[in-house]
Image 1 (cartoon, one colour):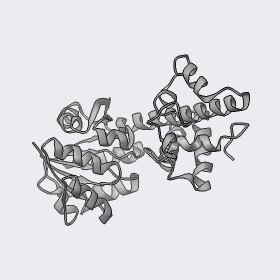
Image 2 (cartoon, helix red, strand yellow):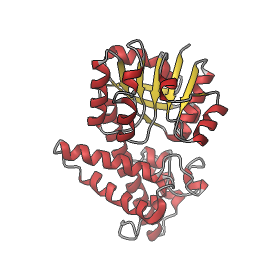
Image 3 (cartoon, helix red, strand yellow):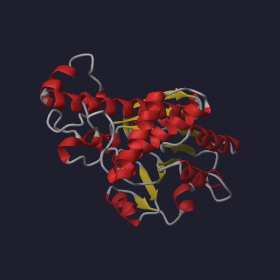
Image 4 (cartoon, one colour):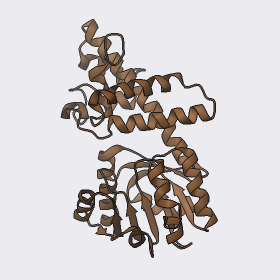
Length: 299
């Protein structure tokens, strides 16, 4: 079993720590939030005094942070992770950030002779709790193979997406697709309501017909058809609308950078931006259904 440092133990990180501890690893944790640290401690994590304490003398260091600037601040610079750990340490960044930032961090690790993978996740808090996450992994084949056993203790699918940064690319593309799909499913239910078609009937038909998709079958945005969906818990988040907006914004930054026209991705970002600005950012992203109007626009 490995001696692991884990940085960023919020809603996703804490249950991931718990799964690593359950698998027999020793996990030292660090976070700027004392509440997050206490939650991770309850799950078996050992609280570090500082960044050096959590990263030094560890076989693996995992980060799960909000965005690119935070990840770069943790990894780079004279007091960053790549200057603390030695070449025997494996670095795993599970944050979802822009591809360019990921590539810069990879470059820093490579210059220091350190193996690293970017391994953003899909599955939300429920997936993290159940150890059922999907990891999209970017990095060399050797680094991927080294990370695989650790990631397997937190997830059910560990997929090598390609070279450095391609894990982030896969996550951005996947979540753009998911955001668009959730809006499409929400609009279909809004139209069904207007036409007098019951929500259950639409679900029973579309979930078995050509309209079936994860946003409908597994995460239905209306109460009733899928008992475990957030719609049946007042949209208590598994994945917040603000996080969806962040990922959609990343997809549009990438699309602009590489001159790819993603009109539906752009529209989805605009709709989630309006939704979050209206004070709904901490609701589950499926709550966008509640503000889809008669013409399919967020009110």
